[in-house]
Image (cartoon, rainbow, N blue to C red):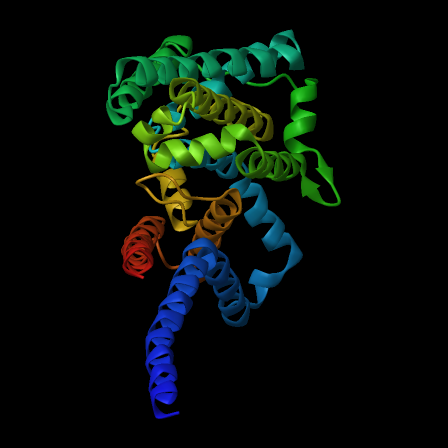
Length: 339
């Protein structure tokens, strides 16, 4: 009996640390996946208490409308970062899409949407082809595309001297400024794309291949996955989504503003990382990115609510918050590996 009791005590002593380790791993994984949602809810709660006007319907709708275009751009960036890459061209592609939409609106809404998607999709396709076929680093390739898209933008606008206006009778304005349930159409477009993106990421072979490639591209190739094809499609989607965001922004503003999009790629990367997507690739979610974008929108709105702070404060706060998130993600990843 004594020997049996000693054995049970030994087994229990071994199992308890394993149980604690498994619990720690689950907590770390949960925090990594859903931390952005928790911080977003906490930020909204604190903001509503400190600023009574924050919780008003008009203010919340305003945050959603201001965030809609960034949501669309960040959606494409999510796919790119999960694949282990980066796309620095989305800001310039976004601006180019808006200018082309305003310029082509004189020939009708179809031209205003089709031309930007064609051009911006082509830029994304070129990015994907060069990265997948040549093996060059995405940072270098998309940096070159950033400069190329901005140069094309300047060529279309006569070095920025021309600002194209969307005709007042254009149906494009109805899309950009129309509302349903008191909410702008771009918000519904962004949410619809997020739903479709989540389904594509979680329920399709493409999505599973994307995670595998981001985790280890060489192992994915040995498994027979079409690594090059997936990367090409990923950058194509990023270009198309950035161009579409530019179209919706031009429709909302009624013009193609040439100075927009500067630094947008950094905002998109920040939102994606804040949302829990790892910069090294292989892990991430659309819902996390959505929370990341909204959190940045809440921060900007709170700074505006304070009133006596400059817009540069938002960049400082967002940058500091991003550093905290990256450090936290690194720690949580280390905990999961050690356990």
